[in-house]
Length: 153
Ligand code: RB5
Image 1 (cartoon, protein in one colour):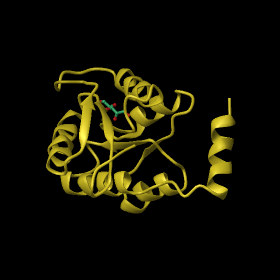
Image 2: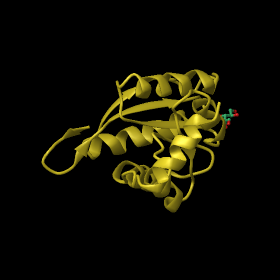
Image 3: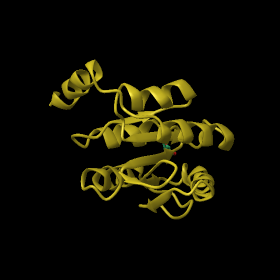
Image 4: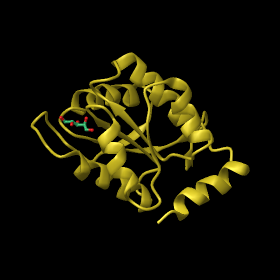
């Protein structure tokens, strides 16, 4: 994680399908206005496409160390999280409430937050992203449980 004077700076991997594209564009504005760096792994329009493609691209960017965190967007946030979680070592959480978006970092060490463009509005999505990016993993007893998750084959 790189540092600036105020806080950790993350490289954030973004991915969406057509149904999450518009919310992704809103979150890009939010990230820009808050000084976050990001890379967009697609899709780049609202033309119908398949969310597993973009889930896998973001998951690989994190595992390869190109990005620190991921934000994924589809219609519900569910399918794209399911796809990302198929990549060993990736923990993606589909959230539409602020408490879960924070706790998936603190307790589950999720690297990816998945949001539903047909579920949450822009204001709530911005708050979910804010708490997800700010929260750190607590480790301790939670580390053992996360290791157990990663050990499931
Ligand atoms: C696309 O219509 C929709 O199924 C997809 O974006 C997502 O919601 C799947 O989980």
